[in-house]
Image 1: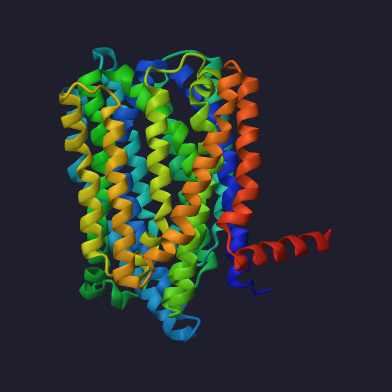
Image 2: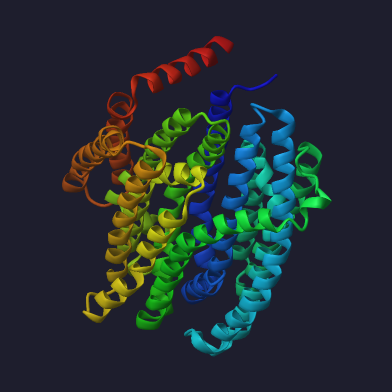
Length: 515
């Protein structure tokens, strides 16, 4: 039975939400076990050395975004002309295979020796850990390389909105990782290089399985020889990717640059605080990311089918739903972050709580304008937009460095990333209005002001438990309950519009009628 677009989006949201929620719960235990098994120094080193591959990972995301955009638009074209759309998608698949074979090889040749040099002589690493850190770098490079090569097949799942099937692989890898981490905790030793090897295996095997399944499921996964040397197609996809690269590169430089600044000025133990804060706040952002992953291909498909009104409507929904998915966890966590970290890690690294608050604030601001980013990317005219975004991210580094030099301490990096994220979000709204006709006033009325009111209300009520109760697990539970009991009804009456409420009522009614 053919699934309607709205029903497929709804199914993908449920699947990705369930996957993300499972990863969140397991991740809380895994983060604690990783810190216990590695120790603060090795945990910090894993974040710094492994984080150097963030450049490769982000570049992989850039290429995935470019490939996914051309795939999804071509899939949308099939709604009007099946044969022409199929031929177009096969053309872009062939182009993607060429790019994803050449690019990873060049990156490995250039980036690997630079990374090994940094590990051996630039970063602050204890002498007895240099050898292990070199192997950490090697294992992550291998995983990233094979992940990039398999990307053309993986991206076809997203373009066809087969996101629910990808959830199975995520459940499996998350569970296996938790089992391995528990084994690490119960068998003390030096796990740094061994843990990196295990992460490498978890990165490779699912990609190989997805590769094989894509060839079986999708007719578009066929290489057309005449397109192998089509420089015009390579130029178009590469141009889109290169402009996106500047925006993503800004994010890479911001993330890894902040880690290096902290390492050089405050040492590896403070890196552990950055890593823990990023991990905890990252789990909140994961749920929002699942919503974005469910909506993005639908927006691209709508754009390919030239249904621009639907694309803009879905983009506004991404802003609302994505932010709400962050707030569900970020609001109570922001009020009880010290106690949560104490319960989670017993002895959390210094500065972890404060840095977590800054990173959560950055995530909320980012999600408020994520739909604008997706719609601009669907349009394809991304040069000026990506130039602005990348520059905004890069400015976080000199700003953080300046604040550190002014003796404002570790939290200088937090103020820097939040300030530049505000600039980036406002820029997204402006560019989306200019390029794809998304109303700025509609965004303010339907997204920003309602969400701001919700945040202020929930925090104002939730903070009362801190006034009357001592820190404890019970207080965390009460704070969470109070925040959620305010948040959920207000979402229905303040955030959702009449059409969205009607859709949810229909879904609920259909579900109940089947019972």
